[in-house]
Image 1: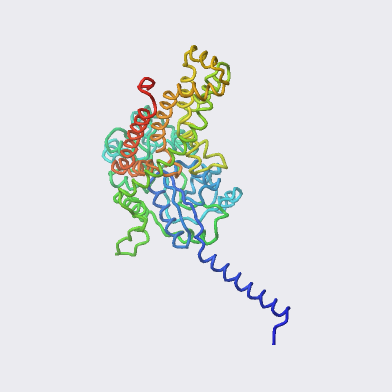
Image 2: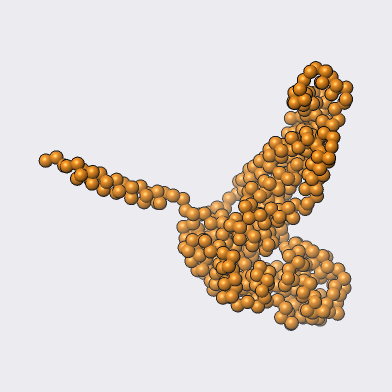
Length: 504
C-alpha cells in the first residue's frame, strides 16, 4: 500500500531534522577550537607564567597564542581592556595601586572594581613577588646596610632603576619621599640589564622583584623594607569576563599551586635554558621526572626563518601603503603654497615621535589595541617622511625650461605630471622609498613589544633573560636583512634608472 502525501511529508521532515542534527554535530566536532590570546610583560617571570597559562588552556581544549613581552603594565592592561588579549599574569599590588588607583583594597574589593570594566581576576597563585631594593652583598655588608632606611646616609650610591618603577604611583619617588632619602646619581635602566650593570659594578643599587633568580645567582642582598612601603604583590591572572567559563576554570586550577621557592626555581630554569616554554614545562613535570619538551620547540634556524617571514610581511605591507599614500602627498607638497609646507611639517613631526610612544598611543585606541594592524600603522607613519620629502624635492627640482617645454607640447597638467615630471623625479622618489625600507627593517623589531612577531621577538626575549646569544638571533638577521634590502634597491635603481639620472 502506498503512503499518503501527509505521511510521506512527515517522514521527509523527520529525516531532514535527523540530517540537520547530524551535520550540526559534525560541524561542531570538526570546527577549530576557540583561540585565546595570552599576554605577558617584558620580564622573565611574566613570560614563564604566560607559558604556564598557555599550557593549561591548551589542555582544556583551546587554541592558544602567547604574545610574549608586550611591554610595561599600561600596554598589557590596555590590550586586555581592548580585547586584543584575553588574559595575562598580574599582581595584586599593581592592580590596587596602579590599575585601579585605590591602595589597600582587599581581594574581593579588587574583583568588584575590576568587574566594572569587564575584567575578572583569578584567586592568588600562591606567591608574593613584591618590589625590593638590592645591592651587591659584599658592598652592603661593608657599608652596614641591611634595610632601606640605612641608605639615607649614602646618597653617593649610583642607582639603576627600571623605567616603570620610576613612573609608578607606588614607585621610586614615593619611596624616597617616605624614607626621606635622596641620591645624586639615578639612571633609568632595563630590568635585566640592570642586574648585569650591578654585577659589573656600574651601579650600586637597583630595584628587583623578590622572586628574581638573579638575586641568588649574583649573591645580592635584598634590603629590608622596614617602613613597609611596598604592598603585597600576590600573583594572579586577570582575564576578560567574556572569556569562556571553561577557560577561566582552567586558569583557576593554578590557584595556590605556585609558592615562592617554586617560582624562583622556574625563573632560574628560564635563565638556564633560555627557553620560557621549557621552563614552564618543569612546573607540570612529576617529581623526579624530566620536564617534557614543548611540542612547538624548534631549531634556531627554523625559528629565525619564521620570524624573518613575519618581519618581511610587516615591512612589505607598511612600505606598500606608505608608497601609495606618500607619493600623492609628495606631489601635493611639491606645489607652492601653505598646504605643501603643512604636509611636510606634519610628516616631519610624526618622524620625531619616539617609536615606543607612538606604539603606546596606537595601542590605546580601542579599535586597534595589540595587533598586526597597529604595528603596520606605526611603521607606515614612520615610512612617510623620506617618500613624501623625496617626491616633493624631485618634482620641485625639475628645471623651468623642461616645464615650459612640456607645456609647449600642449599636454594637460595631469599628462605632464604622468609622462614627464614623475619619470624625471623617479630616481629621487626611488631613493626615498629605499631609505624608508631600510629604516623600516630596523624599526619593525619594535613590533615584538606588542606581540606582532618579527625579528624583534628574540631581541626582547634576550633582554629579559640578559642573554646576548638570544639577542643576536634577532639582531644579526635584522642587520643582514637591512643590508640585503639596500642592495636590492641598488640593483633595482641600476635596472630602471638611466645612468645619467641615478642618485649615486
